Length: 168
Image: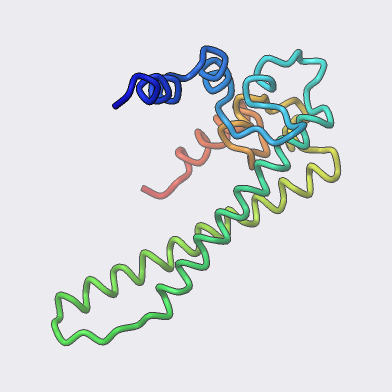
């Protein structure tokens, strides 16, 4: 290897400080004009659910919807691929996989409805606020669960009530 080619490899292999700093500063892919997670987390409370933040969450929900739809297509394809097995163990495994695919499809359809509801709340400018109290849900909770409809306190109360009255 010549010294010129060694220098070229060294410059390609060693990222610049600005490139390394830029890759560390954002956790999500940046679409032109969209805020990053860090920018949303660090925004003042006066900017809560501003138009820019609503656009960020709308894009995140649209991405989630496309991922759910893709997974749903995969599950549909697997459900339509019925094979007949002579061996009872193979048949039992196939039936278990079929049952799991049906359960996954049910869960995905519930998630899809929640995503559609969240997108409707964004259109109506109601996104980000608790349905029961009207208080802000909070950026951290919305980043973790963009389909959230209630704040953490209310969710905790609901879960405690559910655990008390649930059949054991």
